[in-house]
Image 1 (cartoon, each protein chain N blue to C red):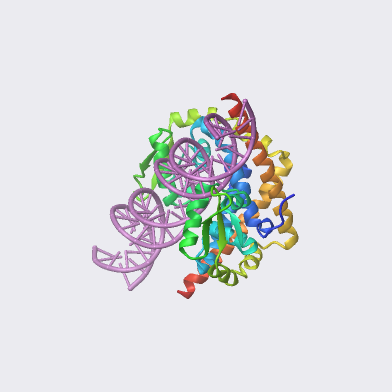
Image 2: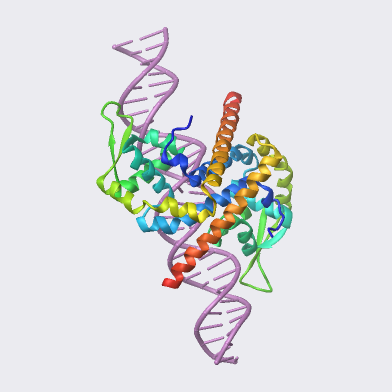
Length: 155
Length: 155
DNA sequence: CACCATTTAGTTGTGCACAACTTAATTGTG
DNA sequence: CACAATTAAGTTGTGCACAACTAAATGGTG
């Protein structure tokens, strides 16, 4: 079925493709609530945590301030959250969901189940794949950290 | 170990994280040959196929001309490939690897095996995961196509 | 043959990911 | 306490992904 090429043998390409396919499938659902996929991830965290720092958000999503700052600014412009510099430590900024942000949760309520059903997998399969990927991510991040540390030692 | 949050239960987030972790691990290796990850994918195809149209490249990588045109322009600027408009069908553009592009293949030769070893998985596991993801991608793309078609029918 | 629909690349604009950098606040050490 | 190192957030610049669009060539139908 698939043409046997170099690409088809690469795990990274399979991951990359699957990830983009997922995002594309989300798009029409997320368009309804006016969020991009990364913005949706931020809102998912805020719906559970109500309030946290940019730093905490970054470590949950594995994103740095270069990505988060403009993204959060856009969400604040839409009135879904508020950013206020902490009084106890003025280096950090606290992100808080607004009433408008909480209201959006209802509209987005059924997205996850619609997505799961679109995968055509049962919950057990989803969980197993998710777990495999989580382990892979940990392994890859550890490996990347080792490479980076080697570079710094050399330099 | 991992905080049990909404994010941690989402397959899409696990995919997204794993994909980014992979790209980050590739980065230092690809820096050595001066390529980004998507540029590397294009070169992998060209090293096997020598010559193909932008359209063909796009369907292999699942990328449209909006992504490929500027990317190919950058690779042409570096002298790794040449783009020439087809004489038989002047709508299409043929992409051909240059001698310089072929030379780069040697430098990039050992990247795949270095990456596999970094995953900490054996070849069987890699193959099994790759196959699962390929099926998932197909399912997701089919689902997305159905959603799109529904929209167009309504409109 | 004429004309409309389709196809192929490319352009423009938005947003994300990331590197490299800046600014300001805090921490740790002598 | 002074001051260097670290930390948190933000800014700037590059490249990718994608939507929406344009331009030009081709194909199909009456």
